[in-house]
Length: 530
Image (tube, rainbow, N blue to C red; front, side, top):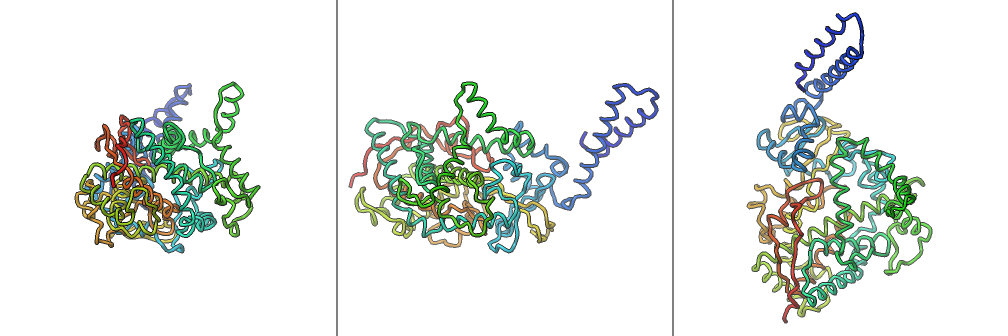
């Protein structure tokens, strides 16, 4: 009944009946309210279909008329499957498709850098609907949730130097220290003949690295029996809930604002609940109170060294910066951890790839215990190719990231996209584009060797002025971790299959796996023989 003509006819009939009735009862009042609702909804649908500046964009009429189309594929009954429906819509309608009343999706890889331009003068705001933005929630303070282009740029600039290649290079001893802890855990697993879940282990490694980077002290995930399994599961649940929050923002945002009060009530009632939000605020406040304090790991925390010169006082509060801390830890854990685990799976599943990699590593690491530096590893073409292919197939960030060109009319394949429209591409679909990556689902490092131009089509870290802030740190982790593990240990896959444990079956900004998966499991068979 969402067709505007049908709804209008029904409304007219109801109004005629009411006007012809002398006595108004509760039934008549309900009829009036129903009629008003249907009339209003008819106007909304009519506006979306015929009056919207996006009305000329190709795509299914139902998707243009209502958000329930997206809900059907992303929430219920098909959970987190809209990205594959979008792929099918492009096959039917072309490279430019209207996927809901306010969003335009682009499949043309060449257009991605128009959505995310490098020139900071080309303003690109974020989309409040997609982020179910509410200025009163703690999430609103994060760089990632800065809707306004200028505000995002100011917040990013304040911490950008800390994530520069120079700063990451200085942080390298700490990265190696965390890897050494992981190596010790793997040696114990070998001695005890334990099975290791690589996803949990790598997430433990990356969470300890990014928390040390932010606060100068880690969260001891590498000391836990299950590594970061519990904390990452909570993070993933939070990301999955956000897809629902887009459709019901008032419910989710209200719950988020009530969270501190709910925690206090539960604690008062005798249920010990950790207030993670307050923990982050407390840790940031300590850094702000003691900015010159050297951390237990020998470096100053990010919030002590950030450039506050372009930020007003309200932007430098512990609560606002805690939002960034939470975003840094979330973004710096699961994405890189998953990439490490998935890349390791593909190397282990392809003996020829492993043999070739080890032969190359031997040139800079003559023995399994050889020390190594990032610049040495960056010069290895096959290791670099493996990491590029791993980034492409891990889908650490898989989903669409809408941007609004506030001052530009964009044109893609002859279709005009008006200024103010939210435009996006899905990174998963770009990285699986068969025209650019033949046999896209196949792990093939050789496609990158001697083909430097291909790198411009890899969007694992985004593109343009808003490219991933932690990219340099992620590269450092990827190079140093995988080189160390594959040079030191003989590792075998254990009860792990691509279809169940690696293949992406859902998208909610991050990639989702089969819920029956027990992870990418391996056995440490011993040290590599020299």
